[in-house]
Length: 331
Image (tube, rainbow, N blue to C red; front, side):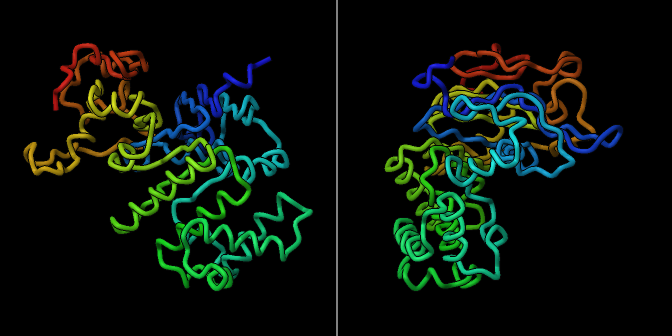
């Protein structure tokens, strides 16, 4: 029997996700390992199409029926892969909350914000009256700093600004006080000021509710300010993993270094930004060996022959054949 005190809140082992069958099959996730402890924030970063959202959608059982999922996903010691739909429905929205990428499309446009949050509350607590659920919804909207919540609760999603919709989505995600919160690109399409407000709100909720959080983003700056651990994904695999400070200062993977090199410097120093040339490979047409090889300036023959394993490389784990020999401070 697992020790509940020392059991990770979330533990993913050899997760694999594919879409389609036969010659049309595409491997979206190729053996992902991740772990998150209670109260921690794990950042998952990478370019669009790297597999960040698919990994978490697989965890939540929200992928289409054409998907094939294998491996292990344990939440509080409970296996989620293979769990029945009815059992998963009890977890989603109660013990596991999710902030979806685009709140405008995630909300039902013909129902008020209040109706949708009330439904989320009563779905997991049948004893809650509609009036009590509405009062709780108003409290939730106030909790995420939406002004005039008693009036806003009766408005429709299109009547909210982008930042207000995101706050309402967060209110719905935390309505039943989950212990795990998955935030999928929570600051996308928001201006810088609103982004900062949303991240401050998530940090406050993390501290107040003592929840674990998975933060999916392409913005390394968001991860630097909010996460404890970071996993860098490329073409369906984790290519680097470690504590945020260690990955930012001692990266041993060319892809991570390319991402860091493309960040603007606040002091204006460091020279011009350097873009990573090329594009991520198609899921159906990955190059043999290391998927990053066609874009890597350090590639050699072994990179075309073998997929590099994720192994310790100093203070981080890196999936590069040359991680041990890469200079610590190379750009």
